[in-house]
Image (cartoon, rainbow, N blue to C red; front, side):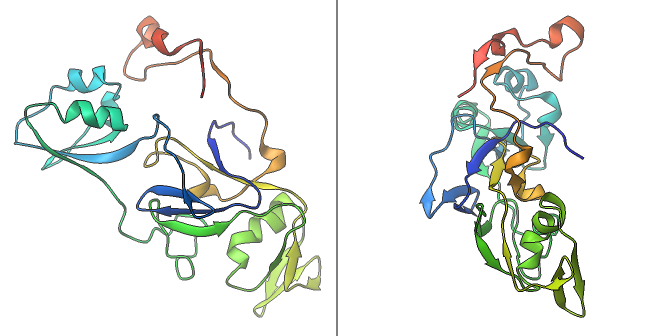
Length: 233
């Protein structure tokens, strides 16, 4: 099954990516954050409510406004954080961070890779011609590449790995692979949940927004005219 997604290619073949406290590092260097980048934040108030219309005017969908005992949990850009800090009933805004190991995070083997959505890696992204060692610890990283994307018969019998019927302790990649992430880092289905994206799954590059819809509105009001016909950067 393949579905079309627009995601940022943050890791190229041969790169090593790592997430620390939600910040992305590529080859050991902190990546410059896009102004579109969003995280979930705890917005701690003095006990009074924030007018949801004001939040919506900042670009926060009503469905994304989560009320909490301390105030709100909201997906925000840095610019939104600066604006909400000006609200008179807001005491503090704190970026949320996952503290628990998440079993649904790639490669889905927390006993070897105790990662989560904010703290992940380091992870090397394979490029064509790379040779990797295969064992029961490394196999979860590459089994989908070997068995699905590159079409081999992959089996494990009595803790021994077989590729196309032959005992295998190494594997050579036939394609380049990429790592994709969404700008809404806490609400994105991306490579942290799928793993590597092979070169033959990349169908193009997004340049232009021709239609943008507001999920809070209906019919004609659903169209966000101010976001249409703009180039993506």
